[in-house]
Image (cartoon, rainbow, N blue to C red; front, top):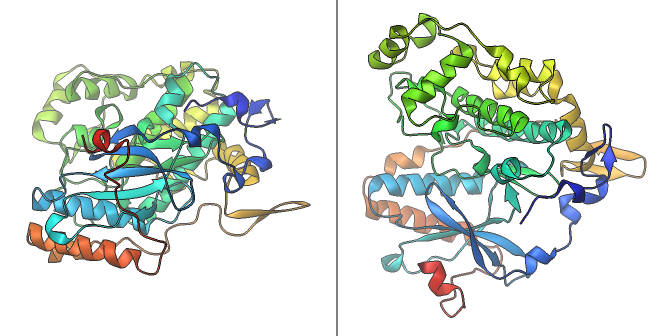
Length: 407
């Protein structure tokens, strides 16, 4: 599945290949790619994803296999959290569950299979491809990332692994955030410790690199800032061999942070920063990323890439930045499903960036005290989720791809 800007629709504005109203994803017909055989298409933090055919309607969908669910209680809670999130999400820019395969009897219940929409590629493949990437594409992509992030954060969810490979895209530039294997509910109590084993290193916020025991949704905004710079320059902004070198690359660009910005850092990380020479900011480097690095682009980027998380712009505030005005217009003119078309033009039916209608609840985790108890809860959740819906599906061991799939 290759992303070809030339096939995205007619040109608008500055001549970029941006989708037109006729390419609304809701009206798409099956493409030749949808006729391909079942095959693996990706590997997430916890699980493998296949492209398969839904026998009920013949459409190609993505099937995510979650193996080794019940190895221990931590794994059990993590998988149940991701499963519930996928069923909770209702947003155009966040991947959600279309269905869950019917589980076997509880004694044989070891794996979970979730069906989601099949997307054609991801942002990492777009960035490393030789295909042109215009300013208009960047604005449309960045707008959708932040739009999806606002929805997640308004539900109290931290993604904790935002990176180009976890941003799925279609040939009409529609983007969805995926892979919630590391996601969790935001912790309001700053005295409660949170794991630091999160976020792929190149996109990891400085507070996490410095051993901060508590962090907020601002770590996701830092990751988006790194991706924004990568879209502009077509290369990873901070690409280091180790977390310490990663921190050094950040301070090379942003300068030595003040002591107030390192208040929550561990003693060793703080000592490492103070031990080195004082570094002035080198933000002029951002203007050299590409021709698309305009003053507005660099201004937004500088608001995202702030060392002190308390001073970093929020995802919601970033959406109101003037740089994204054109991306918002293009998205709601020809791509979104929240607006509808009439002969005289598009009609906007709700807020451009709606928040979640309620917070995501994880109170159920308090009642999980054993693996068996978790298995019962998950089995009951899937069974109840399927009630009154379409004909349930299960894995077919007679299919040609079964041996490869289970391996």
